[in-house]
Each structure stands twice: as structure tokens, then as C-alpha cells.
Image: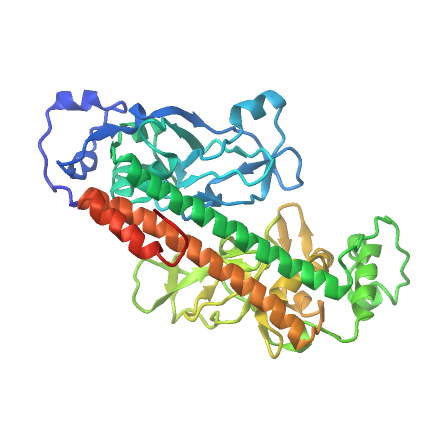
Length: 474
């Protein structure tokens, strides 16, 4: 159904019907087929508003308002948390604040990323804004629900039409929002769209439960560490002798000797049992810059810093590299830690997948002899780990590094098995809840594809079959 003709005749006058005056052949030869039984309407005619985001320098210091970027849309939803902030005025905030169920579209980046679309769901009373390379679409709900628009633009029919409209240059691909408005979308029934909305709502509830499980794991750890109320020292001066400083560490930078680091180490060393990461690991090693290949033969996917979030791995938009060119592989239950990047350095996650991957030169593998990989990850993401990241990383401005040799010096509490198990169960519960959420969203997307290619009755039966054990979908 989606295979366009290789040759297609068009009158030159027809190019005037396109707002961008398209004369490139692919735009016409890749025109998607339609289901003659469905009524179609241009997206521009069924939305109330299309708006570019704000163009402004961003910061990671929490100054201003949290701002969405193109890499913070996953599985047809905007992420619950973002890592950058925009210091904008109150008037700008009114203009660019996202509202519950806005549809956010990525209009520029690589060919793979352009067109990525997600539904924004408001989680709390914080105001989030969106960057200029994103576009906000507000549908007219008398005709189309935001959930359906998001699912359609992520479906194979929607992606096909977006990609044929994309303009590629050497380093960047763009899709003009005016082109998106020209995409024709089937007007499916309200009962069907209600089913899609229920899938999205249930998926979001599962993500909230997952987030709660992650929070419980960290709180449990901090309580066991007696660090739940830990307040790092703000003392700007710390006096050290030569033997206590450069003579033993080789470090001359004053930041390395801040009082808060001594305070943390004293707290850890007061526990019943602790060790260095180096002593509990059989491997601490960083990957190298891979040579990426398009072929899938004799290759494995590569993980970089963008894939490593706090306590979880995001497996999307991965490129592949040759197995023969790599001498270090990520295995199940390895711990992955980002070794570079302001805002991402020290971010850690357990690798809970059976299929191996390749680390790039920003990712360090920690392979423990005895401790749970999940426990190590939660520990390193807590204040106990992040203060040590802050102590040991080297460099300044945008070029900072955390080397394997420094990671090996980190102190870690050897938690009793029962504590590790409780933390591991919470994180794995969170992981399972995310998988259930992902499943519901995939069901919604595939249901849209079925409704277009076959009929709504078949699609609604599919939704019921796939969601019968995962919460009510009428």
C-alpha cells in the first residue's frame, strides 16, 4: 500500500498547489496510497494552532523553566523530565508554555530524528516550554484527538508522508510545518479515537507508577546509607597538608579538596562495610570511537551517552559498528556510566538485556564481581555517587572527563543482600511498568495502521485482544 510508483506524470501547474513549490521527483513518486473507504482531511484543516518553540540559549543550572528538546520525545510521549532550562520572561512563558495533550513535532535534525512526534502530558504544576526546533500542534478535538494525531504521525503511513516531504542537506534534514499541514489524515470515528486515548492514558499512568518505583529505590538506599537528610558542606575553604593533597593524589585543583567530599567519605567509611569500585569489579573499561556501518551483517548496535539515563537504558536511534573492530562488548548485568558531557557525566544505568552491544568512547563499563548491577547503578546515581563524580572528573567548561582509573577509586557501601534485592526488585518493577506502557503505545500505533489499511472493526478488536490483561480499554 505504501510503495509509491517509480514514475509518475504531473502537470507543471500542479506544483503550484504545494506551498513549498515542490519539483523534486521523490515528493510525487512516493505519494502514499489512500483507503478509498475513508474520508481524508489535511492536517492544517483539523488543527487550531501550529507554533514554533522559543529560540534561546539553554542552561543546566535550573535557571528559568524546563525546556523540551528533540531528544526528549520517546515512544509517542514527551519525557517526564528534561535536562535543560530556558531563562525567559513571563510574557514569553505565556506564549511557549505547553498545555496538557499538546502534540510536539520535531521539525529538524537527522533524517532518522526528523518528524519524531510525542504527546505532552502534564505531570505536576511545573510549566514546561519547548525549543525552536520543535513545533506544537493543537488539534480541533471536534474532529481529531491529540492522541490520534500523535499515533498517526508515528505510524508507517504518517512517517512515510513526513519523510517524503523532508528536505535533506549535508548535515541536517528539515520538514516545514506548512508541509505537515498538507499531509492528509483519515477522519476515523470518535469511538475508535477514544480507544486510542485510553491506551495513551493508561500508558502514562504506568509511567507514573514506574517513576514512583525508581524514587522508592533511591529513598530506600539513602535511608540505609543514613544519607536521607545529608546536607553537603558549603564551606569554601579546606586546609590540606602536602602529604594529604598533591603528595597522595597528584591533584592540584582546589575543587578536588572541597569539604563536602571529605564529609561524604567520612559518612561512607562509618558504615559497617565498604570498598572501592575497583576492588569489587572485574572490569572497568571505556569503549572507543566506533566506525559506524550501514550494514547489519557482523555488526552490533552501539550505545552512547544519549542512551544512558538514570537507572535505565533507552534503546532507540542506535547505529551499528563492526564486531571485528571492537574488543570490548557490553554484556547483560553490566553497569554503564557516562564518562563525558556537562549534564550527563556520571549518569549510570544497568544493562538488563541479553543481546550484547558496543560501547562508544563516552561510555565506561563496570562489571562487578559480586554486587548487583542494579544496586550499583542506583548507588552511583544517588548523592553518594554523584558527589564522587563531581570530585573526580577532570577538565572545565564543556570538556570534562571521568576516567576509568578515577571511577575505580569511588567508595561504595557493600549493602546486605536483602537490601540489594529490595532495590533490584523496585527497579525491575519500574522497568516492567515501562515495558507495559511501551506495549500499549505500540498497540495504539498499530491499531491506527490497521484501521487505515483494513477497517476500524479489525483495529478495535486488535486493541481489545492486546490490552485485555493490561487495564481496561473499552
